[in-house]
Amino acid sequence: MARAKYLTKAFALCLLIATVGPGLWAQFTSSIEGTITDVTGATGPDVDLVLSQGDTGVTHNSRTNSAGYYVFPTFPPGRYSLTATKPGFETVRQSGIIIETQRVQNVSLTPKVGAVTQEITVTGAATPIERTNPKVSTLVSNEYFQNVVPPSKTGHATSL
Image 1 (cartoon, rainbow, N blue to C red):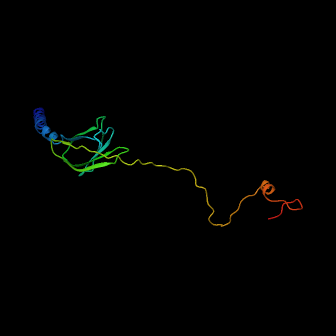
Image 2 (image 1 turned 90 degrees about the horizontal axis):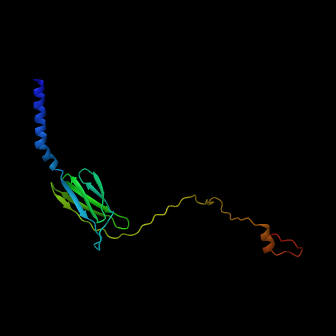
Image 3 (image 1 turned 30 degrees about the horizontal axis):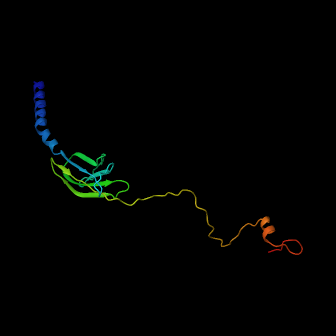
């Protein structure tokens, strides 16, 4: 008797999953796709993309293929923003992308050529500067005196 009751509940659960499951999954069949091209129309390969959901802040990463094409498949409906970055180009951000249920949203971007930036890192200790004593001094060698200071009549260097 208990076994029949268990089988009835299992059958009812399977029937519920079979009828409701596809409807629940259908709400996550939206996607975003597009192509990245520059201002001349040339495709943008290897562009890094970040898709951010505005309500949750969840981000997803992707990269364009050799033809500049990308796709973010299977996302829940909502409001998103898409950011594209590539060295040598300006970062492009498209906000307010609304994904509807069971739709493929096409978002194509055109980044402009950006300024080349260079970062220089200097390592090593700086030469210390004496800031408490205003004297200026130097060492003078014997050779300096022999070559620069004229001898006196006695044959000895004069004192300074």
